[in-house]
Image (cartoon, rainbow, N blue to C red; front, side, top):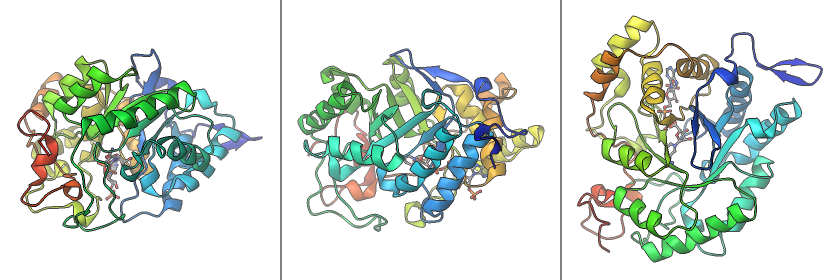
Length: 348
Ligand SMILES: NC(=O)c1ccc[n+]([C@@H]2O[C@H](COP(=O)([O-])OP(=O)(O)OC[C@H]3O[C@@H](n4cnc5c(N)ncnc54)[C@H](OP(=O)(O)O)[C@@H]3O)[C@@H](O)[C@H]2O)c1
């Protein structure tokens, strides 16, 4: 836990100095810590446990937190942020992201949704606010992957840009410093980049050794966005409903396991190290101090060798874990259709 001296929030003796955590620079010139703490508690961890992890993570040196309204825990995490700020950590030294959920893309919903996240998180502004998915589809939290919304819609660029205009307005009003996208594809991003007045600063995307998305990763960087990598460890604790028989397990990969053996760390740590070194910003989740501390240390310690980086580049299995089945909008489609496999936005 935090070491507190007369109200101050000092870094734990075994923690990592936040100044030693690498940073990435956004096109605005702002810096984002090269690793953050994920806060999606899955079906397994309570909001209270996640909020305690946020507090504990700040005490070991984390300054970047990845939140979202749909995780249902922002009101609890807000209490942790209040305590962190009260303890003397400056707001400008934190990086806090939140996300607009899919049933709030309507023009009159975007700004109130952001304001609700700000209120819950007890903040005046967000460092980044992302459109969580490009599909404006409601589905009940925790619903089965086979459930379909009768109102499900495909990606309609004109509609997305109406939502994006409101996102732009949020920056103009000073409520958010950067706006970004998540779960996008190259064709969708090309259209958004062509029409945005304020272009996305970050794109949050699934990235782990068995799902490296080299083309999208390269496109995002070449377009001046920073890729934020979710499920960096291969999300071993994701909800059972998000697991399929063909999914592979990054932390059991022999290459990852061998490197972990050399470093005497858990294979999860190798995944985090690889991610930071490759240039994405991983946001690993854990409520356990030893795990989130090991992940932060991974980002600030000796790098993997060039040969190890090359070996990991060779174990990509194109294994997408978060497939998004609930967003499918008509019968006879496969989840691949959500990801524009033909290199163009899948037609309605
Ligand atoms: N934008 C999006 O659509 C989107 C989608 C998914 C996730 N996200 C974000 O990305 C974050 C991370 O993704 P995720 O939570 O699905 O998966 P993840 O970070 O890949 O995996 C988390 C799990 O890995 C294990 N772990 C973490 N650090 C470890 C360590 N040092 N040693 C051993 N095991 C370790 C823990 O499992 P054990 O408890 O078994 O140890 C933990 O529950 C989320 O929390 C969320 O903020 C965003």
